[in-house]
Image (spheres, rainbow, N blue to C red):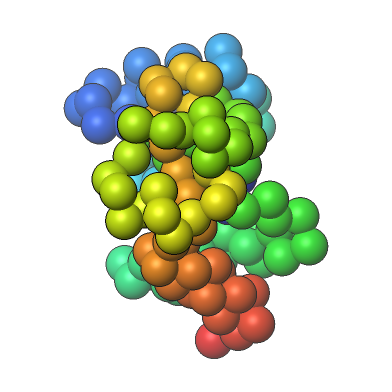
Length: 141
Ligand SMILES: [Zn+2]
């Protein structure tokens, strides 16, 4: 949502996750203290952050503080499915590819050149923007 390349690691193999983080230069976000004790992490070769809260909004605030994300956010610039940078599309280019109501009411679209998912600034988008702004405004809660 905030425009940062991210991967959800669902496998049970911690060493595969650490390897991937090392290979791709990723920071591991985890609630698992065992990850923090792994040698690649404790030695600093792989950066990891132990997420303190179980509550998603507190988790986001911790990350925004840790990485100073408040001033660097580029919301909705990457595909939520596959991390590919989104490209602008005109209404004409989207003809026949969207539900009629969306096509009638939206003029600007973003498309993922990777998976071809289409995004537009509808009510869901507006709600997400408000949520991000609220998080950024209350970083110390
Ligand atoms: Zn995509």
